[in-house]
View 1 (cartoon, rainbow, N blue to C red):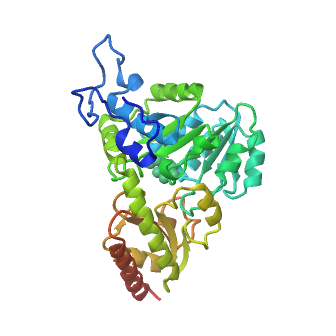
View 2: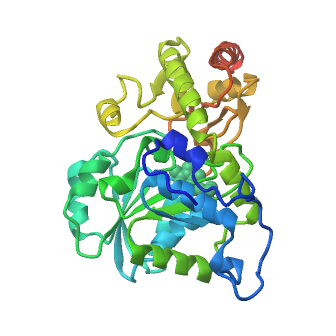
View 3: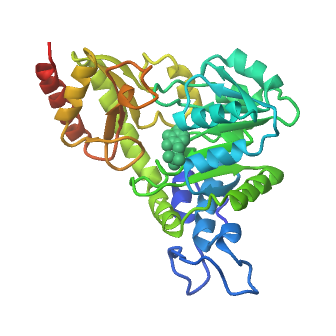
Amino acid sequence: MKDHPKIRPDSLVVAAGRDHTPGAPLNVPLVPASNFVRGGSREYVRGDGTATWDALEAIIGGLEGGDAVVFSSGMAAIASVFEQLATGAIVALPDECYQGTVGLAEEGERKGRWTVRRIAVEDTEEWIQACGDADLIWLESPSNPLLRIADVAAICAAPRKSGALLAVDNTFATPLNQRPLELGADFSVQSATKYIGGHSDLLAGIVTSRTPELLAGLRRTRVLTGATLGALEAYLAVRGVRTMALRLERAQHSAMLLATRLEAHPLVSKTRYPGLASHPGHELARRQLGGFGTVISFDVKGGAAEADAFCANAGLIQLATSLGAVESIMERRAAVHGQEHLPPSMIRLSVGIENPEDLWEDLDQALRKGAGQAPG
Ligand SMILES: *Cc1c(COP(=O)(O)O)cnc(C)c1O
């Protein structure tokens, strides 16, 4: 594999992870094998992976500026980081965080493996203090689903307790908009199910790090827990990530346009998007992120009934959970189990790559129709 030390991230996603041997296939092949003929560099896939894994790890490692370890899902990647903790560890977790991560942290606390302290996403002082006494500092920025912004650079730069680990869930930002390892994080974690795959057709997770011992620990956990990525998923993730820069650019541009119009819409009471000047984290997001992302959270005027009527009237935009795909998807988040604390009419919209004017027409007509139909 040739090195491309000078190319930019949007070229790297296209060029990295290819075999340049004359006669080699231009695209990394899907290798459906569990074991290999003895005598080579690989014996068994759970421990040794395949060329398809290698390609995905080369691309994401190159983007994040470290080495990548692929997992069977984003949650497997997150659990593998937690697995590196010694019993009795203190975990600092954002007060708003991916609900799977919260569930994992709380489960471990119930079992006496560690204790969890929740810290407000924006409370940089408290995070800096936590760096002095916690064993795992877990950041997620922008946060899901309210898109709050943590000062990742300031927290990464704070003096840390000896041996403490700092991880950033970089799923919402993607390595194109934010590179935590460059800021001093030990781990950058991705649910590759989202933007990297980009087509709502796979589950995958990736952790990157620059520290050989930490990478060895992650690989050991992957072997021992069997959190191994399937061959087809690895192939689809490589196929998907080739267009990630293009998809993100388009969707991000559309998201800015839609957020601006939603904010001015008479049937929307609140719009949250880091690209809007009204967003409390806007200035920080401008400094910290290469782009504002593709997710918008907005409150339909009224309550849950109005928001449900709005959703039922959408046509082009699919009602579904998840995010980061070519198709635009949305859901009323407070209707999701465990998310009842959110504003009842809040919609999380993941903007896809459709024509933004079609998306706007769909949102506008669904808002108007929904307002006419909601009871009382
Ligand atoms: C989806 C998601 C995860 C979990 O990833 P899976 O691939 O579904 O296991 C973790 N963090 C964030 C921010 C996510 O959006």
